[in-house]
Image (cartoon, rainbow, N blue to C red; front, side, top):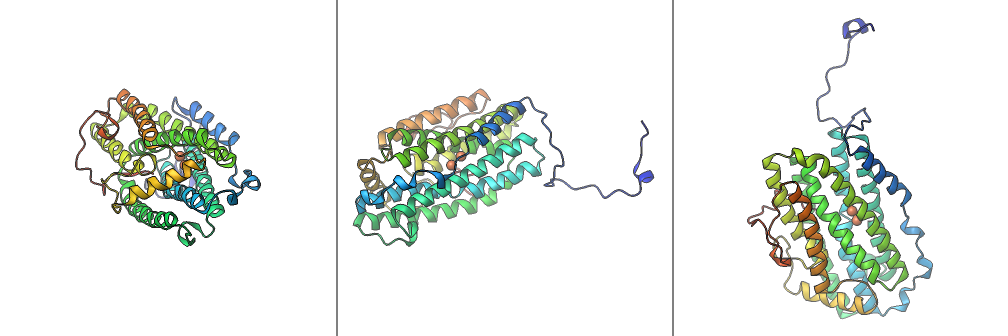
Length: 342
Ligand SMILES: [Fe+2]
Ligand SMILES: [Fe+2]
């Protein structure tokens, strides 16, 4: 074969500086590529549309005003997490292109992006059917509803702080380190929605939670597959960061999965009492939100799953005394410096 050089062909463009967003390659080099292709195929098969759910059979008028406001509160709480997911994963998707990830990895991240957008849309639709005007624009009619709206404002304030932190931190870490935070979020979400699906009496909500839970299970599988691929090669420093990220992930995600701890969360003293009151009313109206003990139990099980994964890769798991898990003491987490993921 005749070798041609640049000079014979005419001038070539300058070397492209990296990272550059265009990979111009569709590689499938790792041993995990086939597994990632399967997850991608599942994401297409299992695609669902929030607008196509049985909204016509949902009668918001069958609930009292207090019940509607309490259930809408829970969807608003969820939306503080789920409405931040599309921008969070959009950043991660861009990273997969910048670092010229394998083709299937890019598509898997695209599927997460698309799914999270659905989850966000579902939150918005549920809230506007129950309390037209949305979490901030609706005029509450009950005392509990008024307290709940104040809680939402505080949640929104914390979500905004988190986004600033994320933007500052996301560029600092490698993708494998980001996966550890994402795994926390996905494991926690899969656990949460599984419970909600099996405990919700309203068919529309049970259906939505089943579908969201299935999506989160796939997202978890993507993180686990990438960890299998990359974690054997992590540096000592990266391993230490993962331990910290997991402790921080626990703190952030407790906001929706358990109860927000004082660490990081900036909330008024009566916040938790209002949240408990809303959840009590929602639960007695057939909404499948877990009780304190069920949450603690679910959260502990999800954390133990994550513990099993990271310890298999010789990474220390942090102590999480709140749910009775012993491990490495992690103190002084600098929340400006970590990747919080909701
Ligand atoms: Fe989600
Ligand atoms: Fe997810």
